Length: 267
Length: 290
Image (cartoon, rainbow over all chains, first blue to last red; front, side, top):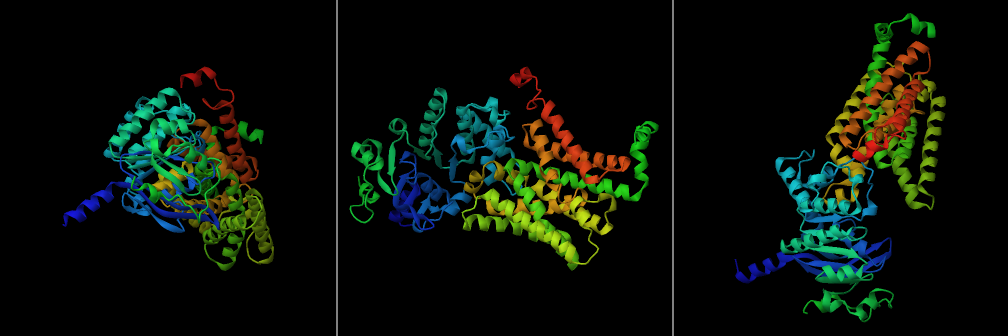
């Protein structure tokens, strides 16, 4: 193979998330337009914006729940549908979105991360059990594996769902407000885990409005308000001017003076 | 009635009815149908589909009547009208400003009324009372066969796909994100619901079938934190209620459907009061050590 082509392919493979001018609308209401973003493997990225700015729409587009009306999304170089089938993307929900009186144990929840890799009747093999044990060890919940999830603390619940993402072996993790309602030990454990994930080449996208956590944990930051206002390394993008634009500042005109993500590509 | 009980040994209380062919049949069908509905009730209660169960079980009525009139299996008619009613609920919900619970109530009563009108209009050997209140003691052998087929189909489907259905009830977002088609699961569950409703109709009738579709699940839910154990408990308690209900109905000469449902409700009350962890009379020290 032509060595130049080969390096291009390798470079492409390193890009975990590629969003190219993605537009999403719901029945004519624009939720997101011209959102472009490239995230390479091994990055922790904060997704920052107000409520209704399109954070969850962006997540839904990455998970394949909404089809962009325009633009293209690739995960690990493949389409979102294929990424689902390959178990590339894991979503870690907000605590509020889950029924914690559901009769499942921590073990059951983490095993759900393996379903996509199992046969249609979801009968766990030895390798699935090992993956679950390994994931539980990493979030320090192995000794609580028999507990009903309702009996866990807020931080432990969060860790259980992180373990599910680990068991899934997803390379792209979408986290929705991961730090809300967690205790200090869990926050420390999660911070360490995120660094390990980065080391392993996973890419983490954290949706939050807690700016302090973005400063502390994220190498990259994406500011969104109906579109990607800016993205890049946290130190460069986290300026008061950019944050003003994101929160409460005048929304950018989609037709004039657009801050395209392309501006940041050759930083 | 009390003299009957006194003059009888428990063994004869259990065995004597079995000398009748119709009682053996009623007991078998009721136990099986109870088990099917009990199994499904776990998914209904966990998914929050109690109202949906009520709606579908009523909406299958015109389907059953039309199927009888046309001479096709009543499960087919039930399936068409059961799933159709839910599709209609979804459609009206989406296209109008009316709230969902209103739409559900509106659609299922409409279907139910259609069923009642059809029964009175279509001259056939359908007995409205049998459909409304069930008649396990008078069930025909062709109905028995159909009910057996439906029951085995639903039990097999629920057992094989219980993991996916559980995940769908628990966290549909995750299910979708790993590539599971939740639309298919949704309609699979609806299909099972329509079929179970029509099976339950044989024993307790349309009006009370919703009880079969939620009470055993609610009882089991109070007794365990393990999903598989919950399904087993619901299956067993529902089968048990059906058998006991049929016996009581035989000896006391009371309506069978009502009798079955009352036993189920009684079991629920016991669980509500005395369940080790979630009963209201629980020993609180027990909870702490758990």
